[in-house]
Image 1 (cartoon, helix red, strand yellow):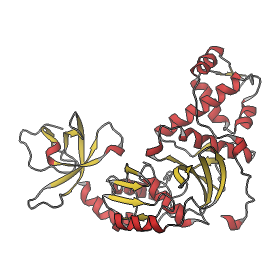
Image 2 (cartoon, helix red, strand yellow):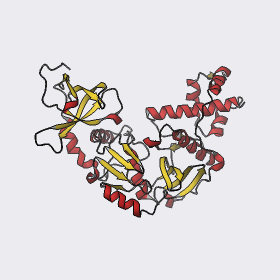
Image 3 (cartoon, one colour):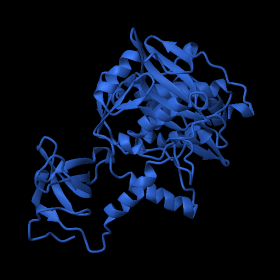
Length: 404
């Protein structure tokens, strides 16, 4: 893409240019994804929605023309399509209930179907531009990361959300009025775990449909994959909260199919940004496996995992397996370890392979214990926030057709 010798007075979709990153201390290459007229300006002026190259889409944002370093400007190539027009054509479909296809589970994949592949492509195009800049929830102001299909009238700069019932509002005054009258102080459903100030509620997606739909819409602001929005009936939602004298403050959640043919024990998982790096991700993963063990099953998260998901799960699997081996459980087969931990055999094998602690003997995988690897890991004394089985008050529900 050749540099332009003439400095532009306006950029177009597809153009590349360096941008002064937020506080101006860093310069990043960015591509223009969309543009719009800047509000409250007497003269023609535009804001540009940019994607910073080699950075996660969560950092995409609207910037003014003054942020561009025009001496680095590169005009889009002739074959670059003007996707802005197509996006506007498709946008209307994004804000209406999806009837042509159904998004199920935590992730929605085309699975080789050409029709679904085209729909997925259109969906990706629609969702390139964030429709909400930030949310106010509880005492937190949180920057949104990705598009979420809230109704068009709620595509605003700031969305206000009740942290107890998850009702969403456009205006601060409405939000404050709601807070003074909302009777909820915890998620719906049954409390199944309480230890210190951490509590977990099991919410049936069919019995608390509106709450679960609102939870999915909220979560999609921070998840860069297709997730269920409307059909919550086939899922349970396990909502993790911090408890204080004011109520149960939502920290994160995971969803789980009531009946999974693929034996997935987790569909979607999210710790909200304001509670990240506090160990809740590992807690949620360990909770999903404690429930799996109570079901007398083994399970695995729905695939494919995000990059962050792979890191979190591999870290958890490594922790569980090395601690088990450190306790002397060295003569167990992979199948026996799977039953002991609830982790699927293929996940155990892949983790041991990454540790170079597995060999193939007579056509079977055999654990090759490396004491040095175990000792070095145990010396790190990593402290994970995990679910304590003794505080989990949960038994598998009896499945009936009415539950589905």
